[in-house]
Image 1: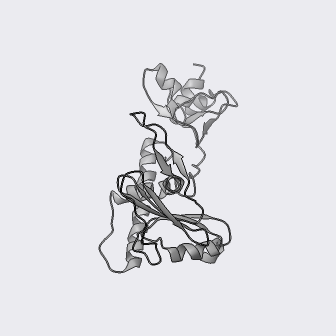
Image 2: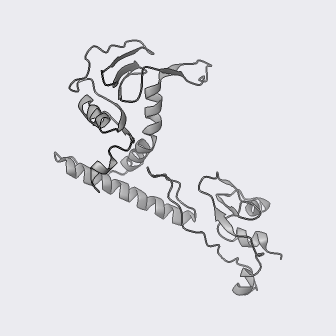
Image 3: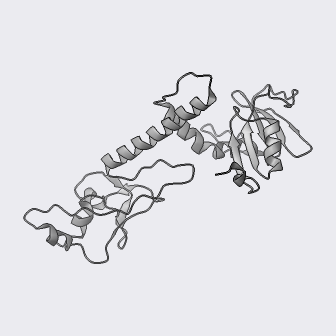
Length: 251
């Protein structure tokens, strides 16, 4: 797909300091693409007089086009660029000591926007295949390989656990395939008869946005098993394996 397709759409792009620069931000802003990111002070055209020393200090500059360059002192200096933010500050929830601190709005929004990317990078870095090389395209290849291996591992774990994967892609949670309840394993009962024991209208369903809850059948057996499956009619949380059939069995 032509990369120009994504311009002029009003998208928001979040970058780390490896890619951020005033030149790039000005170009993206001219193509109606908002962008926020951390930045290195030695980038070309960055203001050189941004100074913060004590924790909580903020210093900023704005360009004629509305781009913000901001420095904020937290545990260490944080430098930000944004084409959609001003110098607004927001109050954080009180910490364990009851102290309320403030943080620039641009930092808050950046942390939210980069959360999925940072999580994927963190998981992929655990078993990285990256090798030292001076060719940038080889690094890109190894990174994509790491992401493919990560995805395969998550699928493999999900199959072992008989549960859908909990990893969220950048484009959202992938919809799992329709769940097919396994027939109950009752002794001295033919398989066809076991399938007919589930009352009509009771269907095993999976909700991607639902939290894990204890399986009702396992809880009766004094076992603690959590599941995201439930009966679509009676809204009772039940395991994917035999619990659905056993719970609805009249025997």
